Length: 212
Ligand code: PRP
Ligand code: URA
Image (cartoon, rainbow, N blue to C red; front, side):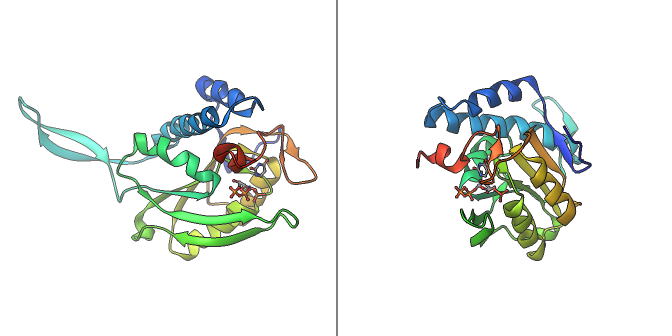
């Protein structure tokens, strides 16, 4: 398996376990949805390890103390519609004050090129840490377009969280956005002729929303 300087594979045993159920074609919609949320939460726990903290003063019932809180502006979660939506609630369980933006993109089935249809993200972009969420990084077209749009809107700090990635997509991100670290639960083997990840998990949006 190739290695990439922009890629971290989060190979926690619980993530691996949940991922094998997620991939299984027999997994029903409700379980698929729950698993996407749980994996996203576990991934966010790992990814937030690097966030800086700052001192905060307060009183316990017994005395005054100095604790620590996450520094800076609130995190912004930005799911790529539709399938990224499945990752939001799991992460909000860990970071309830995070802001949430949305980027609407779909991949044209013929050309595999991303088509954008919606963009709304929180203000204060220069100071925020953005977590861009999409379960699938396939050709990388959608992720590259989403990062380009976010940067044009002022974002300076972006991390991309995907559940499954193909080497082709990671390379495309490295070429276009080498400053954006990518965190995945698994790096798969390759894309097929239709741009689907192998072994993958199929169409994430359809499995999440039961549309096929
Ligand atoms: C899927 C997935 C990514 C994109 C990845 O979305 O959720 O956004 O494809 O493919 P790429 O790396 O080749 O761009 P899709 O376009 O199927 O839209 P949907 O979530 O609305 O179903
Ligand atoms: N989008 C998906 O949902 N699955 C893939 O395998 C590739 C793109």
